[in-house]
Image 1 (cartoon, rainbow, N blue to C red):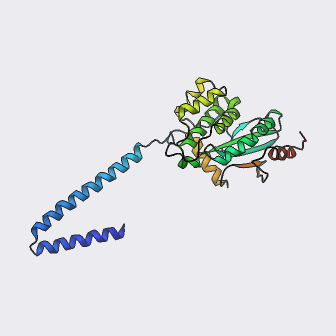
Image 2 (tube, helix red, strand yellow; image 1 turned 45 degrees about the horizontal axis):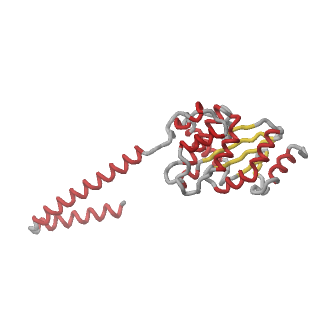
Image 3 (cartoon, helix red, strand yellow; image 1 turned 60 degrees about the vertical axis):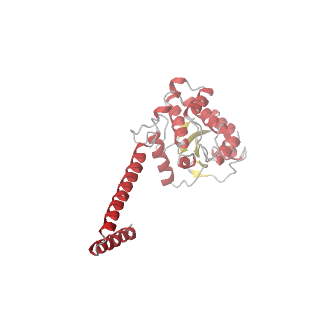
Length: 251
């Protein structure tokens, strides 16, 4: 910016010199041209600011509402077993889709047999990969809404979203399709109708920030009792065995 300002000052000085030399016609043209340029710059600036202010903020500026099943570090709790299984994911992340396909049956089993408390951490760092639709945030908000109002269907919706996962870089699923998937796994319309309110978007944003401040650098990341596991996340079995071993069981 400093260099550009200096160039403008030099041009003005030359214009004054030309005027003093009697080139009044040139001075008039330059003044008019300069006025037009200033007006154009002002118009462009106003347009950019307006576009930024009018853009879809997806409820990010709303009040912070915390889902009923949320943990202090941004998880959504399912089950009540002795082993804490924290899963950090993004619904646009293709590797999270592979993880879910390999492990969703085992994760459900760990909840059903009372081995694990599953804490889903839906992140939204891949909003940038959905062409401005903020798909990751919208999907996470839907899951948080179900966790708050119909927690028995959280894992089902989680699975449905990954079974219908859009390609990274696409616009993602629209709100109607997300609601349709939720309804297909048993979430009542009284709940899906509230997805568009984006009540939990501020919570999603806060949880996303907290995850990265706590050392999460990508998804999927899985912790067993607070420790990042190094087991194969893309094959059925290893994660289940690691969790049951942590519980001191052979189920």
